[in-house]
Length: 165
Image 1 (cartoon, rainbow, N blue to C red):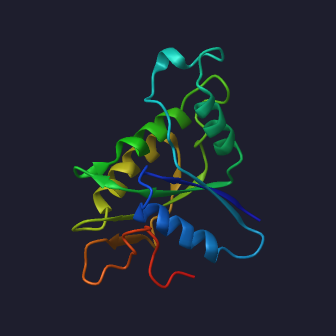
Image 2 (cartoon, rainbow, N blue to C red):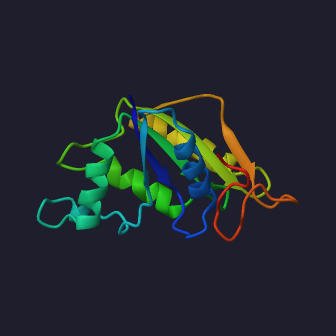
């Protein structure tokens, strides 16, 4: 039995990356669990890394990360890289007096959706950070979905995949 913490790189209500994570969660084998985290966190600020000043949202986020056996990242691509929320989530999860790098020595996988190349650039940039964090990222198979094809594989009003399990 594996508990996966899935981190979406988008704060959008109708995020297609979150939609992919929801579809994967529905398809998990019996006994496996997934917690989908939308990292609505304050911008990382080292001055807040004390127990007295650490925001409650960060404490809750880090508590959820500590429960993970593995991670799944649903990454948006903005300006040829990871989104700000994704990078911020990585920063808050990789530091802290209450356990330091919570990604250390864990398995991870990446899915992405986006424009022309379906978010592949965000996944590539994520791998640079993952190497430093000692995350063991699967090389394949991968999932990279183009949002704006005709027809789109997504319901753009909800972010859900058409025909998902």
